[in-house]
Image (tube, rainbow, N blue to C red; front, side):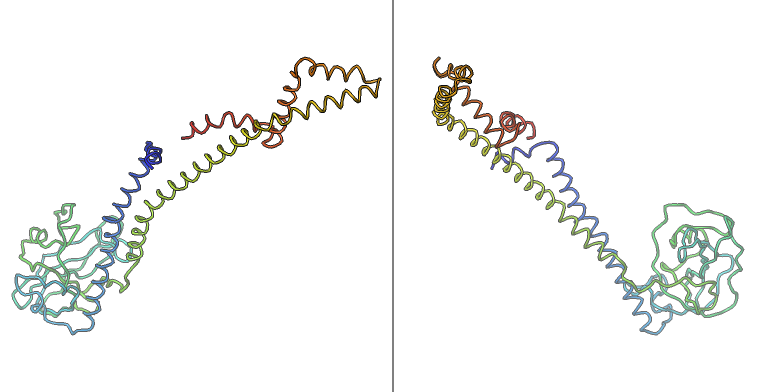
Length: 339
């Protein structure tokens, strides 16, 4: 057992095992949870959207009272608010595509009758090249708007563009408060398509779970297959090595059997020499050639040993091919080089 283990303690096998273990750890602890977490978040958002259409809209003060945002689980709830827009408080949101196309979203501040000010996403406009398109001011006077509660976003990495109107790269309430000088509710509202003051409503997310669950399962499967693949290759290598050893042992045994059979062939060679001598006496025309073949027997059987060796080589060539007996001699060298 220890011998088999030592055979795999080579840089190639060790590196393969380390890579497989690292990939499995990454798949189980990072990649699979990442996709499964996205699936859970998408499922939760779809449930909130579904619930928002099953209940009637409520006054914004009920879910987003003064100084406090809505509770966990109340995002995408439908709300209504009465009041008026604050003049000269516009902020533009850049780099937020809508339906896969570039868009600039328009943010205005709404002073509700409950005394709270809310940031309102009124929709989007398409940019005209690299220039910011002209956007009409927010409606004036008292009006009633309706929309969906939305959660405050993290502070964007890219700083805002301080011009008129200011431009931001994320909807972060604290950042927008610093740009407008207005104190706002911690969360914001996205106008619905049938609301007053809406420009072009931002489409609602589709109620689809997406491919995240299947992606998560695939990463779990890949993480489990990586070490199993290494085990399979190790097993295949062990089987190949056993096959090579068995072939080497069989060839050595055949060579030993052939060597043991050589003494049994010598009397036959002697008998063949006697028959040749008898034929020589009956055929005077061939007597000179036959006597040359019988001469080694008279000198101590030296040619009989040579004939046995030649017969041995012929048998090896017939059994293993023209180079079989040479392959047996170099088998150990090749085996050592491979492993």
